[in-house]
Image 1: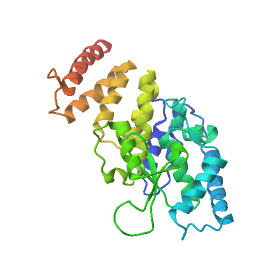
Image 2: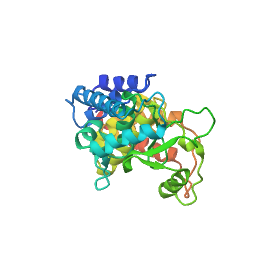
Image 3: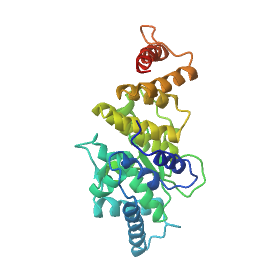
Image 4: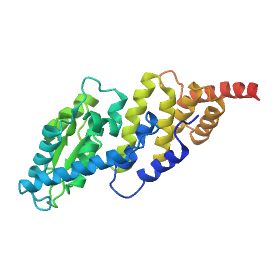
Length: 297
């Protein structure tokens, strides 16, 4: 059933869990969902070139990443990526799957917040600029930390790569949260905490899975769950969804295996307004699958 090679899934899990900061290598395995013969080499080389060019721009303006202020560093990086290179947010076709593929974002120079943030992070890292991702609800951001050791984020720069590297105040972040979560959403400064590599890759994949399910592209959505489970093997939601997607793809034995395993690992679940739990719904699927699998034997 899986179209991605098992070796690709294992390599993705290995890279996602490695202790380094390299996001580009695992991210360039995700496009294999649509481009099975993609060579990541040219895109890694392009990022190296972009990092070198950004570093050259800094040097030409006398900006030393080791001592310069975050504002000076971000101004130069924004000028290079958005003014010179033309990267921009894809507002017209936000749910185009290509916006989630790093190779396509580098080719087309447009994407969604998290993939543009990934370009920002990888270019900055290669230019010697310390920038971290922020797993902000509804809209991924990046942060350039200050060099001060005082607690809090007041002197850090919060950057929105989707909107040309716009600098956001705390008030802007509160408004952004309310826009995506709701007017009653409570802002917590910990929402601006650094995201880990697994968290960033998981969010990329969850965005993509949502798009594929909406498009009813179930084979690709199924493979995305394989990658999600490679990042986080105990993820019960992904185990369940892999089983449900296998059901859609008429892989009844695979669906039965995953859904039975899911039931074994879950017990008490909150019921909906009609008193039905997710466990109850999956059990109904399992009973149907058992009958179907029995007819195939």
